[in-house]
Image (cartoon, one colour):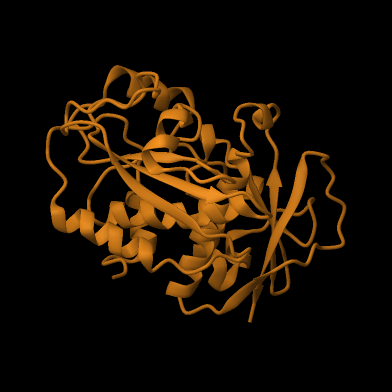
Length: 283
């Protein structure tokens, strides 16, 4: 089972919700998500992730320990785990975002959580294997008609609805020439869907340099983020996986063919906080 709406519409519909009401998730929707999880293709780096439902109480009254009051009322969480290895965080973000979009397509609410939850209690619940880590989780359910005070404050603190402009994210041939929207051609929409993607505290760390038929993805590091989580979890590399997901799903939907490759462009990175990640080779 795939998405029932165009992926561009789903991406635009997705919002982060921290307040949930008492409506029960229908069995058929829960089953649809479970079935969807089994159909996910192997990502570029080949890492497999697994996702489990964890029920923490009745809808509207659920409470998961260790979320520090950030989530109110969610009775169910989706917990993701992946074995540690090269490209693990990017692959996890790529896969989990597809699950998040599936839930959105089913009119269910979610919220990427990479910081404000305790990993220890969940490790036991899902039987975390040696070598595995839990990079992120998400509540799952129906959104409350009114956001809680904590939810409202959290969204305001990260300016959740704001996205950086094109000229700040996308570049033409080098780091000194912003890519104009009209110069992006058929790839204007895949790039726009990257721009609209969720990211940890809305830092939007993706940067893309376009050279002919190559789209070079770079990670623009935010100071101090590497110290926020342990156990090999890297939130900003997860964000890059989300960007790859949005870009590829949109390109495929538009009939644009291409493959992920490693081909670092021969241009100065300018910033020491900028890391090459991957390249989309359009064909």
